[in-house]
Length: 374
Image: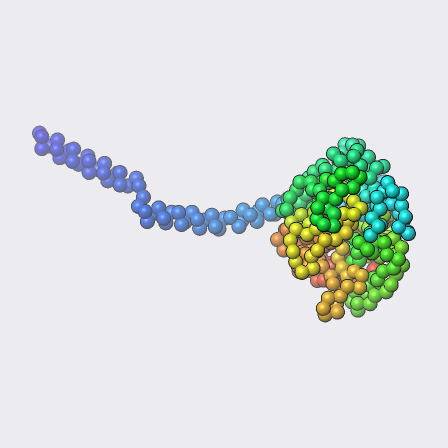
């Protein structure tokens, strides 16, 4: 009997030991499992990231569509598109002290930009009701409203910050105007000034040089006298009043809006403050501070007779490696979104043909665009 009990106990212990061994993993097995999991994660992560970017890109596209639709509604209401930004008109640099005219650029108050004009058409009427449009941007009465963050003007793929920022002066420090600094809401979308730019010293010049033929690099001298419209060949510029009939190249073939990530420089939906500068967030050979107009506007180039070392006009499409604060810049892989004058939104490759980009950026230069442009 004792022998039988001993054998039964021994058999039970042996079976229990075998079951216990089957429950665990050896170190080699554990390492293999970890390696397989790591491999699966490595395979799935790009797909997850791609899916997330697809969703962000769709959101960005929808927001630009809303901006394009709002622009059309603005035109239906007022018979024109909103101004690139509103500045006291002067042809000789004289202006009332209250508008704080910049002696270098002739930019002045009130300064409200194209985005502000669209607020009633993008379900932001409450915000504009709290703004004193009859006063300059930097008025004490506007300080709270202009610092508002509007999700419509923020691309979810853009890095560099979504929060409001202090407008900067030439030194890169916060600009003081009207007895204080100016904190404004951020935007990742900008309006097109066309091929040419007319800001900085050009804004106050008596004459300036513009391209008459981007293919042969032919230029001519024009009278400016503070009127940016004599240089700009895009739909938005200082005190612009562009109408559909002015877009003679066709709204389908004219870029109105595009992206500019705050990873490159600060942009705002509010407008332009006299004496302000836009400063780059990182350095590149062609990158440096630029005039206040670039808080809301960009251009495609060529501009002002500028040529590269080969003698060719300088054209900078979206993400072009000059990385200038006055160009479009997107953080969508491979290119960026643009809104055309007809309200359609398209994705433009960062490798787009340079002349095609210039052709699409002007509204009245008469370039012939063959076939489906983008």
